[in-house]
Every structure is written in structure tokens, then in C-alpha cells.
Length: 361
Image (cartoon, rainbow, N blue to C red; front, side, top):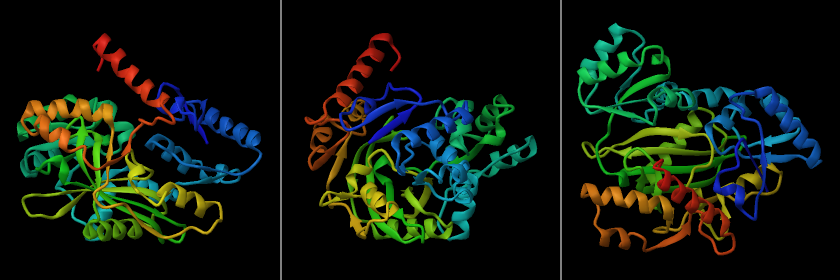
């Protein structure tokens, strides 16, 4: 396996199972990155499957699909579909059309529409990127919480010039364990060959972060609703669809679609046949089994992230130390930690220690 990234500081670069290669940054120099891939294809001497691991690579592969498909098999949905997925405003429009519930949201484009939205949106609300690859820089994070119309107006007016990349969304209440995931791989005909259902138990940082403890739970409503959405927009390839169950009415409401594998996808496995392997078999022309994946109750844990996450949950009173330790029962998949491949974990731990020492956690 080859892993290419524009910096090699991540733990995956130290894995014994991965040949890490530094590549140009596709956001800054698309032409150079295209040339890099062309050279890589010649060096490989055979067609290879490409799995993107971030939204930047998803957009690049989708944009340059025509040029790249001569040399690679791309685990990426068609360009027209990707444009719907990466822009949450278009994602929510498609979801409404397909009768998939979504949070109340809006995208003010001028002062008049901002004032109207400030009166209509339920609070607390979130200012968040409509397109994560552009909006994160504007708000310096994943989301900004606002508790009133005055606060919303004040924040927006401070972001003059960035409105086009942002949206406002009601904040669905409830703990992080109400966040549900459908993981799936759909072949070129839109048939789901691999399906996984699970939920987050904790995130880092809490409430607005990535999974630090996840659990495999078969939720037929999550599966049906997620597949209806993916099929309805013509999706193919690997995907994660995330919902949050609203405690006010019990309904699942769409959070986002990730057009790629997700952090805790290793939990989506059964008898050593996982979602990525099924995708690989299908894309290389081998018979791919159709699996409903996941062992009920099995858990995935990121040891480093969950330790940091638990500290914050405990401080806020949402978790006790005993409850934290009990929650590790049932863990079958560990992020990075492996006796067969220890260097990724060592690298990640050293990075945390170094950042703590320099005060840049």
C-alpha cells in the first residue's frame, strides 16, 4: 500500500504496511499534483485503486476524474454528486427533496437576509462552513456557537467577505452518543455491497469533534434513511452519512455526508472482510460479497484522543472516571495501537507530548 500526502508528519506515514510518499499539495498546485500522479502511475506499471482520505483529495480526484481514470480506478463518486455532497446547502436541499429530515438552517447573503434569519432560526445555533474546504479558515474551526440573534448578527458582520462559504444551522441538543453513522460502499450501479451502522459515544473535542469512542449498533432506520439519501443523489463509492437523533421529537436529522471512508471505519468489519476490502475487490473486477457489516456491541477506541476527550467530559460533569473506564469494555478495534505495527502510535503520542510541552495542544 502506498500513502501519499503533502506532509509526512501523520502517524500513518510510520506504518510498516504503508510506503509513505510526499506529494504536492493539491489545494495549492493542482498541475504539479497531476504530474506527480502521472509519474506515480508510470512507476507502478499497473492500474491502482485510489482511496481519498480527506475532502481536499475527494474534490481534486472528482475534478480531474477524466484525466486520472486513464491510469487509476478512483473510489470517488461522480463530479455532479460530489458537488452536492461537499456543499451542505445543496446536501440539505437534496435531503428535503428525498424526505430526509434536516436541522433548520439558512445561508444569509446580505444584511437583509441575515436580519430575517436571526429572527427565524432556533437558538442555540451554529455558524459553520457550508463547504468545509473554504469555510474553516473563515471561522477558524468547525463551528461557532451563537445563543441569540444579536450574537449571530455580530459574528456575521465580523466575517465580511466570507459569507458565501458559511451557513447557519440550529444546534440539535443532546449528548454525543445520539450521533449515528451509516457507512456504505455502493458500486457503479448504486447497489450497496457493504453496509455498516454505528454510533459515536464520545468525540474529541466534545460536541464538535471527531470520534474517540464508537460502537457498532444495527439501526435499521439509520440504514434505510442513509441509503435512501445516497441512492437518491446517485451516489457511488464509499461514504459515511451522519445523523443526530433529536431528543425533542426522537427524529433522526442529517448532519453531513462524507464522500470517503471515515476515521473509525475499521469497526465496520466482519470475519476480516471490511468495507474498504469489498470496495477494492469490486473496483478491481473480483467478485465482491455483499455484507451487512458490524458485530453488535463491538467498540472502536482512539486511546490518545479519548483520554483527552474524557478529561473534558469529566470536567463538565457529563462523565465519571469509573464510567470512562467501564466504557472501554467491548473495545475490539484500536486506532493506531498495534503490537504488530507500533510506530504510528508512538509517533502520535510523541506529537501530543511535544505539543503539550510547547503549549500548542
